[in-house]
Length: 188
Image (cartoon, rainbow, N blue to C red; front, side):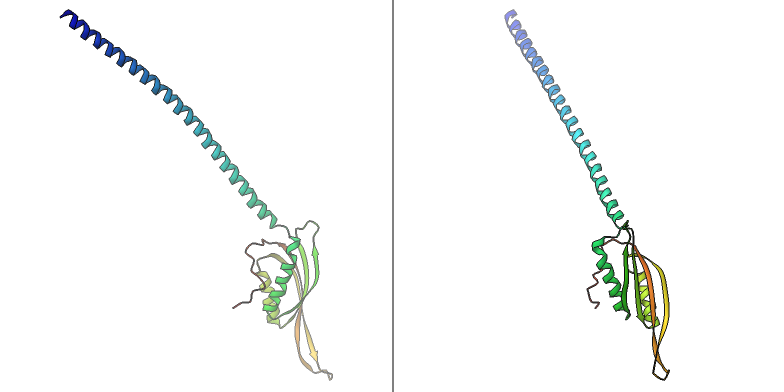
């Protein structure tokens, strides 16, 4: 039985050594795999940090664009002056006022546009016109309004009626071109 016991002991010892070598190999493989996963995790965390940084830069750029567009509304765009003047005329037509633009002056710093105009019509029409100017989408300041009544008389000095005349001076401070109504649309 000595030889059989030695063979069993040798086989058991061999299996034990093989298992131990296998376990050590498995542990080494798992450790290598763990290190590889840790390296991938670091790379991924760096990429996520980079993406977050890029998103902050993107938000910053978009914020800067929004701020630039807002700043641009504080300056008068020379290409849009005809639109503004057309709006003044359209508002006059809507309020039954005869209007004529007598002076336009763009400030050198482009921060304002001075406009002088004369309007004639009934007192209520002129009042509606001035009020409508205040409610346009433009940031304007009405500097002065001079009202006068012009009587219409017959050759014998008899008054036949008359109409009101207003000289209006205003300053366009700024506006955003987005959201402005189309002045050429007819109201339904």
